[in-house]
Image (cartoon, rainbow, N blue to C red):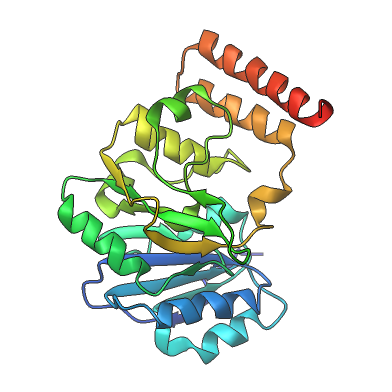
Length: 266
């Protein structure tokens, strides 16, 4: 019996005219959340972007809701895949913009979010990436993620200077450091940050603390990962990127001690 080569199920494909941003959403069964994200893109004051969506073969009305808004979508691929990072790499093959950003379904950019980042790149033309200030979606939440610190990434467990919604990287810089490493099932984004900031020492910048560009929703993929699963994978990432094994050991045991104190000592 001959094998039939599977074709990607591309439901929407239209090329944007020299977009500055390539905005990517990887989604599965998020029929309400995807509408919030699309709505926030409709309302952007900066319009020069393309929007690419990779759907993991949703069984609810996610695809239907996307198709209803096809005017604002440049690409929709809907098919089964092998996980979130596999889907993210798939999306990167279709990118036409100068700057790439991933935004989860349910996360949003504030009205002037893209404009703020665009201005930041124009003022810092040598920057490979920019971290934009983001906050959790709670009403009046003060939980902000902003800025970046190379040393904190290098010597601390669970480095999270920003959220994917706030990480903007030039396409040429992404091509230099490589795509997401799909052998890491829960922290491939951490590996990408490590390569960008430490291994390749890319030039970066960030918005100011009060320059909010986006709001992200809690309860996503990373929130379902246990402490020890994340710790062991981030340790593998450090060793994979050839960080000094002595420092890796110190970071590992320091993280366990901090976790113990936080969990059991009030």
